[in-house]
Amino acid sequence: MHTELTDTEIIRRILQGEQALFAQLVQKYQQYVFTLVLRFTDNREDAEEISQDVFVKAYRSLADFRGESKFSTWLYTVVRTSCITFLRKKKLATTSMDNERTLSQLENRESGFSANTIEQKSKHAMVNAAIQLLSPDDSQLITLFYKGEQTLEEIGRIMGLDPNTVKVKLHRARHRLKEKMEKHFSYEVRELQNNSL
Amino acid sequence: MRYVSYKITLYNDPKVKRMSMNTEQPMEDRLWDYIDGHCSPTERSAIEELLATNREWQEKHRELLNIQQLLSSSELEAPSMRFTKNVMEEIARYHVAPATKSYVNKNVIRGIGAFFVTMIFGVLAYFAAQFKWTSTPAASSDGGNLNLSVQKLGQNLDRLETVNVTKAFNNTYIILLLLIAVILGFALLDMYLQQKKKELQS
Image (cartoon, rainbow over all chains, first blue to last red; front, side, top):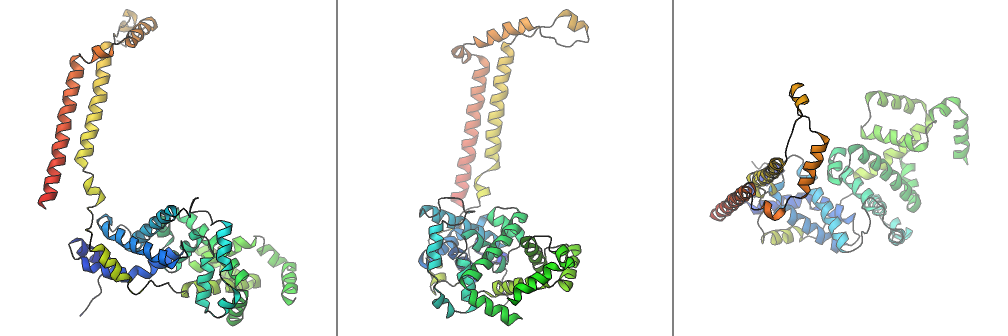
């Protein structure tokens, strides 16, 4: 009978020399990592390059993973540092990652989503588009909380913040997301509200 | 229009007025904590009571639940089909690096620490040996406490200022210290080379 290996078991065996098992970790986490990276950069090619780099870095420093946290928490820390390094190299991020992107960048992103294209998309695409309109920190926070299965404490560890600060930031991020959705996807939001009544 | 009139009716209700003392943001925060399960049992029952009686809270709760549902059901982005293959091809060129902890040997850190502590104590001992400590007879009879006269202290400090550095290196203490430093240096080098040898053998 085939039993699925835990992350810790996979890592232990990779460290013993079974390199091929790393593919299991890649398959399991590639979508999470890729989505998180896309929160930092809009370019899919760049995101794929960074994601690949994340997994290579993770593999090379796998011996440093001591199992004190979940593997995903540790991996997302690698994602964050890789993204910041990449953005610094590209000179896109000149200020702290806590700040929102510059207004011009944001406006460029917002203008990319016309009402007509959005109307044809599903509500999932609408949520993803709205998340993309947020600052990298806000969108990453929301992704980690809802899709990365991370607790406030774990997000705090990834982002180097206190869990209470993470909670406050999460409240603000969701508030801003709601505002973005109301501003750019008012029709879809109204539809959803009517459906829920 | 109906919504506006409804809002006005709500705000005229004294009970609602009392409950809406907080601005919208704290109400939203409290509701998010309730939805996320991050609030205390007391807060939870207080919010449940508000949700049972207050229409404004009910509306906001429904609105936030919609967002919650949307976020929970949002889909993850997928990279290209070749992604796993690309990563595996890339890592085939590498080995897992040894853990950071293992290449910072504790003995090396201890050795460096011992070297600096020896140096500090040696220098202090040397200067203490150069310093002339005197005690007044009165102080000695007063329970044997050392009492340095201000005048003598001034003189000794003047002497310290005139310590000849080149002469200091001819001193036995300094030579001894340098000898210890060299021995420690060799010990560290030996430890490093032994570790490298072990790594090569493995």
